[in-house]
Image 1 (tube, rainbow over the protein chains, first blue to last red):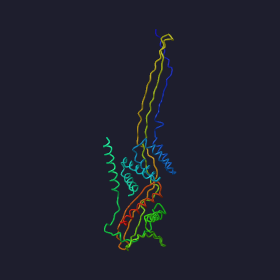
Image 2 (image 1 turned 60 degrees about the horizontal axis):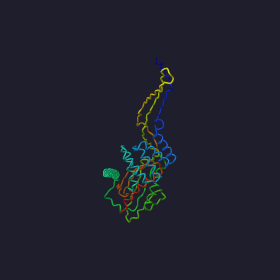
Image 3 (image 1 turned 180 degrees about the vertical axis):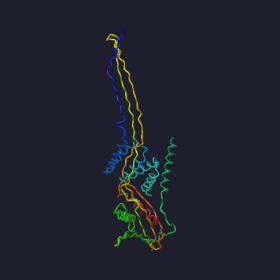
Image 4 (image 1 turned 60 degrees about the vertical axis):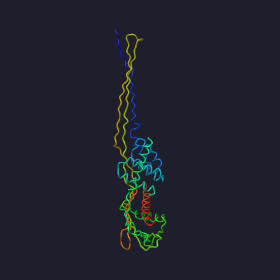
Length: 109
Length: 213
């Protein structure tokens, strides 16, 4: 006779939730960027926008804000690059027009 | 590979150049001889409806930019601003400017992705079975893994405000009333004061080109 006893020793549940630290990162970076911009911390705002772009490298509106910040900091070369990226990823004609107006000014007509 | 990369860059550059060069140019009366103009009278600029004082700010910026472009600017007792072109001609032009936009409260929305990276749930169950003798106990372990792939939604938006200054500029011959040059222009930026200054700078830059030849 085979006496079988099943003893449940332990049940281990490992819940690896990757979503909690990563979900909404763009949201957080953008909120921080705008808060920093509103108090005049343009360099900090740019850092946060660069972090947001790691999650969303094709977001034209982020490039637009980046370009405006570089313009405010008188970093024309960086601003031109950001406006060009804005045009590259934008499907909105109004944003493209706005980018062209800025590029025209930054390129000295 | 390298040639394709170069070709793509070239196409992108051409598209950008075309976009920039196709930007709205001023309307100009080609038959008018701007060399005969000696004076431009700057009309008083009315305030934008939402911003008292905006007209004076723009007027001062335009005067400042004319000076930066090498013109003599006089502000007369009757609050009129006169720009002297140092030409030998006798014609007088009148420059009028209407503020079409003057705000630092233009709302811009930035869309962003709400990304759910999903979860991985692992359950490990360990059990032991004995056949009478304690020495012969057998331990077995089973593992169950459940994966949720997550999802991406483009539903998030965050807003900020930017400045925007817009103008319609008109230049007419004071004697004949002939409209000789018009342009509408706007500029955006983070700060209202610098945006106003750039708008005035670009406007005056375009006007200055009329008298450079």
